[in-house]
Image (tube, rainbow, N blue to C red; front, side, top):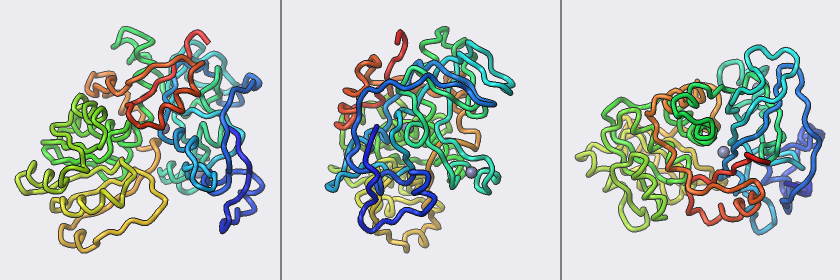
Length: 381
Ligand SMILES: [Zn+2]
Ligand SMILES: [Zn+2]
């Protein structure tokens, strides 16, 4: 991905952003372009390994880099430093070790976290690495995984040997583990930031892209009494059923609050996950669906303001919790454990598999938002 550093009218980058050429993509990087380039093979520094990339999913954030607004700025609002190789939902095989690597060996199959906290700032040190002020994001501000090789720090890498053993297939483990990152965004929001829900709770999920589908599967695994999922796209509603939703609806054709209230016998939703990024449409029904003490977990990203009837929060002792990212809080290792034990049947989420040579087509295709996860297979590259 390339783009022009052209800060948007009304936005002045800080001197640090200027010096690093790193700032929210939607504010500074104009007219993004995508194409094939040859880059030097990476060499591992202290505590780093080189991975041969084996699978990499196309993320909604990648789509948001490709899609631009009327002024030509990408929709993606995370930090970016261009040019950059995109791709961050990846698994790979260790092919070289830097000095100081403790646990990894050449040949290990691994999945790597994509949000690289500095480890030094207060947010990182108190256990909020997703809020690191110096955050580097793989595939946006640090070299990504739609490439033959990538460098990763050992401390962001998790091994897949137990998953490969259980599935009896390295290829299956590499594909399944490439879903940990989007599932991790749901896990982090629902269980780390919002504190989770008790077994027997009622759960609503708005938006059945990969993160919403991850939320459905996690809610099922965590013992929800009933899960209602909402998405305007029929294919995605079908996926939500496969991943564990009890009821699915087109939110444009139904009163979602009424659905959640009647599903729960009038009690309301204990947790509602907003993974649609359409707060102006989803907040009104969510306000009317809260159970006493209910929580809305806001994962979708919307730049604009959305009106909220705060009185609904008072009446129901309800709350809205925002969350971004998938690191810290044990997200990766705990999701891997659920996958290893067969308690998170998420593979139907992968709706297309494409060879690496088709990655640009995959990016274009992702803009129609009909798919679950589009997985790029880099074997044989
Ligand atoms: Zn992602
Ligand atoms: Zn930090």
